[in-house]
Length: 112
Figure 1 (cartoon, rainbow, N blue to C red):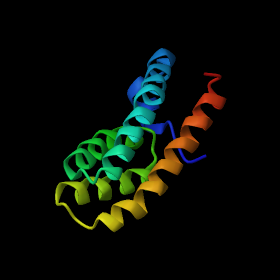
Figure 2 (tube, one colour):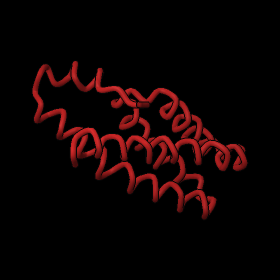
Figure 3 (cartoon, rainbow, N blue to C red):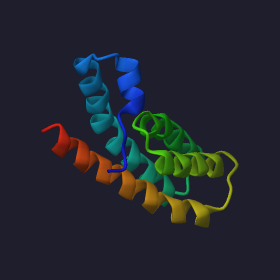
Figure 4 (cartoon, rainbow, N blue to C red):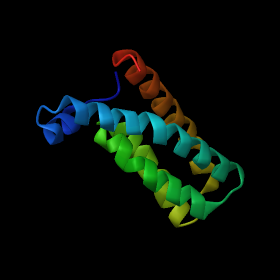
């Protein structure tokens, strides 16, 4: 398991509906954002790469996905500074793999 609900549990203070709401939002938004990011990379659109990585970062952080957050941050920075496109292409598959794995795990763990 590469996610942790520790941060969400602290915020929720026992509110199960809140936890499920955060998980649902993650499952709805992050895969779409990931797809948009992938398209931006295919189009070498640094501004869009920056925006989408920036949008994904707090969502994966909320689920305690530290490695994924670090990758998103690096992609975000590379997009913002129009840094090495090769580095973006190297880091994106790792980000995508982690997000897809967590989506599968969350759906399984919460019968969604």
